[in-house]
Image (cartoon, rainbow, N blue to C red; front, top):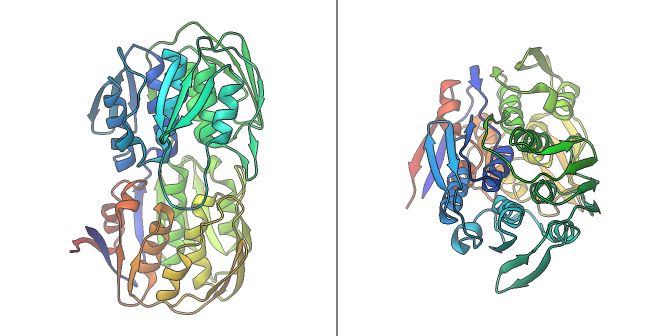
Length: 420
């Protein structure tokens, strides 16, 4: 099993190109099942989750071809049963349910896996599909769904922690081929949902309101192939921006979308970080001194839960007390105990982490628990004195394209090592 060995204390300097968004490309890949014609997707990141989704599409009968950052999928003849061993490994795989129902009117898909960051039930997915006329049951770890006809309807997708991103995507993909009009209230507003709607509209769908809490879909008879470029990954961009500030370096993020990052950039500026925008590029560096900030994770356009762990590392560096409150996932502080191994002073009080910052970090072996925790531990390793060994980096490879190579280009002393 591979680990990352990081020698800390080197400020990062230079330019980094932001890859395509993982959370956009996975549902877009699923949407290729809606047509028998070829679909070309550009700026596809080289990630294990993307490869898994490619394998899932192939297991359903689609032809899948990767050529660098370009992916071509042709789902001419497909089946409605998803491979259990593939789907159970990745949460995003549940996105095949809506397209299979729209195309074949039946589906058998195993319940998905993913990072262990708290309960993430698919009840809102199922609620939304039922509103379109789908009959559902769960048996032996599978969702079994049938729908002789998909009929548009009005539905509400709000949940305990806000709207569901993947649930919105699933219903959106089912509704585009349903009869009549579907109105989704309390729809997720994330840029990745907007990107999926853009992909579907380019295929011939009729969707308006994506990016707002109300999305209206007028069903069409069929969709066609498309050539489409995925948006940049706002979470990767935020991770490198925080790394620049944490290491007291300066990084220019090329091909980013600052308009997708308002909440993160606002908190960075509040913390004393200098952020300059040059069109689609951002230059980030630490100001004269860092200041503690309080953060609460919220659905978009609030502060993203996927950046909470990375920001916690920056606050651990910052003299003073910061309070970080997690409102999306109840088990997303698993990185706290590992940061404590490096010397961070963080206490958990219910849904909040109280960070007493300003103490120096020192290198130690640490264990990654999930994707974003992995990124936080890498940032901590970049600033810790001595050597940090981050284990279980297969989590990291799920969502960051060649992160170690990108960091080396910025001056980091980081390498992959094989652990027995």
